[in-house]
Amino acid sequence: MLSTRLAAWLDSRNIHYGWVVAATTFLTMLATAGAMGSPGVMLEPLQRDFGWQNADISFALAIRLVLYGLMGPFAAALMNRFGVRNVVCTALSLIAAGLLGSLAMVSVWQLVVFWGILVGLGTGMTAIVLGATVATRWFSRRRGLVVGMMTASTATGQLVFLPLLAHLTQGMGWRAALLFVVAIVLLALLAVLLLMRDYPSDVRLAPFGEKKVTEPPVRGGRLSSVLSSPVIALREASRSSMFWVLFLTFFVCGLSTNGLIQTHWISLCGDFGIAPVGAAGMLAMIGVLDFIGTIFAGWLSDRYDNSWLLFWFYGLRGLSLLFLPFSEFTLVGLTIFGLFYGLDWVATVPPTVKLTVERFGTERATLIFGWIFAGHQLGAATAAFGAGATRTIFGTYLPALYVAGAMCIVAALLVISVRPRAKREPGFGWPKAST
Image (cartoon, rainbow, N blue to C red; front, side, top):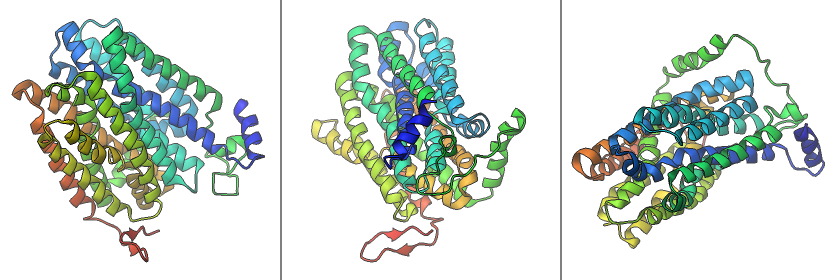
């Protein structure tokens, strides 16, 4: 295979093939993130073309977010049984089918099937759990940094694509924008077919940071047993207070990002007279800042107490959301909001992954993090539907902003309530993570 020859060629130049797998995963998550973020641009065109209400469309998007989250632990189990490459190829095919099918939809139930179910299942298989699985298998060192890169690809893809999609939607219609997303998804599928491998030993390498090549676990067992393993992992993890704290705080993370701002931002800005292209440009700025902030969060998570990191990340995000209604949506106000909120968009992911691995071990971490991520998407679905219903009933999104900001403050206080014992780094004000 191309990957085996490329791995040998790179190894002769002291470049580990894990970085190629990480780059392929980055592209995959970037493409699927574009599919996840695209409906935010199309809320108003769909209302205009079909006469659907905001709450109706938000219901379909909430279904998508629920499935996106609930697939996480089962995706991890399927990757263990059938391999990362096979699962990712299936997921990308589902996403492409859902987007292509939606080009011919004429009723809300079809929106639920194509955008809600097919896209929800496909993106759920390639969510943050995929990044955590690749980082855990291929990297012994720099794992936090790699998780930060993967997470940044997800959030940045959801935001940076939006200005282009908004431009295509305004100039050529929402169907042209969807075709562009399909092309990116198919490009990622080609890269996975050519370059993705399941374990370092598949290309005769040890994980990055180790010297010993270890054989991958033997795949086997009935499908029913494979699908029951996440349920068993949940039952075991549910006995731990750390699991529930991470689950609940990640619920707040999804509530205050994907479900609220990503889904409703353009419509929210429209209430204050800001055109869709301008609002999408602001999201693109948030995406660029998020890319920087999340990678920096991954670097910090390798060095300092992850509980305190989460305290600051949730606290600052909450304050930025509470500030937004008072910004009057002026250029200066939105710039201040975008700076703090963007750097903190999903900076919570690397510390959460690190705490999960430290508490539950490498072998069980991906399954348990899958359930924690399900909490994230349940929060996102709650905000996606709740904010849409708020806008329909009260004519404003502002109550949803106040609730999300307050919940972030609660999450900041909750996460330090079960903080593991830590030692202080000499000469620096932050406690250093215990190992």
